[in-house]
Amino acid sequence: MNRAERTNSISEIRDRFARMVSAVFVDFAGMTVDEVTKLRQEFQKAGVDYKVVKNSLVHCAVDDRPYANTIGPLLKGMTGIAWSYEEPGIAAKVIKAFAKENHKLKIKGGIVESDVLSAANVENVLATMPGKNELRSMLLATFMAPMQGLVRQLNAPRQNFAYLLDARKRQLGGE
Image (cartoon, rainbow, N blue to C red; front, top):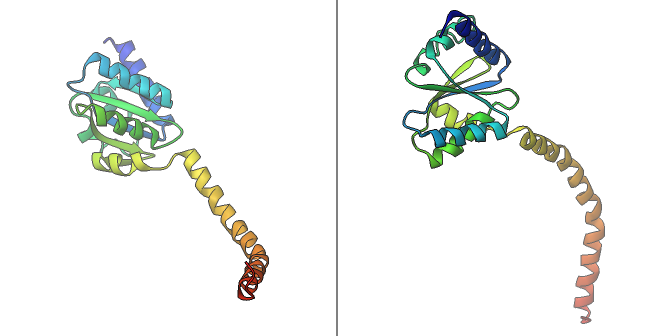
C-alpha cells in the first residue's frame, strides 16, 4: 500500500467513525469466503457499512477521538468493523443473528457514541436494544394508554347497568 492509498484509507475510516452512531468490531478468522460474502449481504440489507481494516490504519484514523486510547484491545488479529449510522443496535443484531449459525464469527467489542463496550455488552445490551420502529410503537402505546383507560371508564356505567338488568332478569326467573 503506497502513501496515497494509505492516506485515502485513513480518511475513509476517519469519516466513517465521524458519522457513526455505533461500530462493532469482529474477528472473522476461520470463515470461508462464502460465509463472509453472506455476512456482507446481511449488513447491506440492514444498511450497515462493513469493512475489513488494518489495525494500524484504524489507530491512525481515530487518534483524535476520545476512545483512541481504549480501543487498543479491540484491534488485535483480524478485524472487521460494522458501522451503523442511524440505529445503534442494528449492526450488533445482524452479527448476533449471523453468529448463531456461524460460530467462527467473534465479537471483539464495540463503540456507541464515544463509549467503548466489551464483547459481552455488545451481545447482551446493544444487540437487544429496540430499534426506531419498536421505540415508536412503545411510545405510541404509552400515549394511547390513558385514552384507552378513559374510554373504558366512560363505558363502565352502561356496561354495569346491562349486567344489573341481566342479573335482575335471572333473579325473577326469566332466562
